[in-house]
Amino acid sequence: MSSETELNDEQGAMHHREITLSDGRYMIFYTFDVQTAREDDVDDQGEDV
Amino acid sequence: MSELRYNPLLGEWLATATHRQDRTFLPPADFCPLCPTKPGAFPTEVPEQDYDIVAFENRFPSLKRYPDPPAVEPDGVYAVEPGIGVCEVILYSPDHQTSLAAEPVEKIHKLVRVWRHRFEELEKQSFVKYVFIFENKGEAVGVTLHHPHGQIYAYPFVPPVVAKELAQTELYLAKSSHCLLCDIIDKETLAGIRMVAENDSFAAYIPFFARYPFEVHIASKKHLQALTDMTAAEMRDLAAILKQVLSAYDKLFSRSFPYIMAIHQRPSDGGTYEHYHFHIEFYPPMRTAVKLKYLAGSEAGAGMFINDTLPETKAAELRALVEPVEWK
Image (cartoon, rainbow over all chains, first blue to last red; front, top):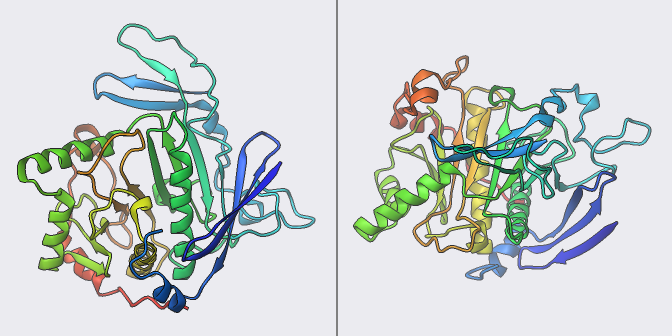
């Protein structure tokens, strides 16, 4: 079983994909579409995430 | 088998987890269970060939979402409960040889975002009252797997160290109308003698009351209770100051520096904790390049730590090793 979610915020998208292991435990893989720090600095000023 | 037993002498819960006796113990790098599974190689716990950051339930958990019944019945002064909770492992990198200190600040920033997401997700569970994010690094603090990783314990109660901090900060607020950590941060940033690093959002210092020679606390300058209160800029600043402190640690004795990292946030039990203040505590066991600080009679038996060094001296040593952070 697998599910994937995208969490967008001004730091760039963070994706997480969850799978279920054979013994029933969950495992979540995180990946990122990261903006450059300079872009973040401009975009993020004073904003809450 | 795991269960929670209550210590009525100290008013604290502890977990018994007998299955953990059989957990993997310091395997050779070629048989690391936390590396990605490579084609033709033995299957690790991670059934994929590569990853960035991974979170998963510990194979040998102290607490479980669906716990077994306790091995014994409650009896008079003895209380016992099922060991309910969540124990997660967070893999920082597929690279077996790296460490959080060696990773670029961008990667530490990703980890901060994952911490925040795991905190948000775990505190949604009705049985979770406290989410504790931590890392044990190095054989000196008892790690059983060298692969760079941290852990999260989601407890069904507020653990005693945080409970004590909550009580003390509440008492201080009642007496002074101030936040205790806010006052400490003001004092440290003004005095400077125990400061290690600083940026717009965080201060890193060896506390006046340090128990370990190189014990560093990182506290938010703004009065925040949890990762979920942070702005994007604050999360980046947290990554940056972590990079500075961890890099300074590794430079100290020219080795990968062992430590326990404990992230202290408000509880997740629905209560109001305006008096509490987000901070991270590091407990490194090394007191010199070749000597460890042990928890001996006074520390373990009486709870009074003896620090063989002055925080002011050790802060100066660490501060001299802090370098600017370069974002790519």
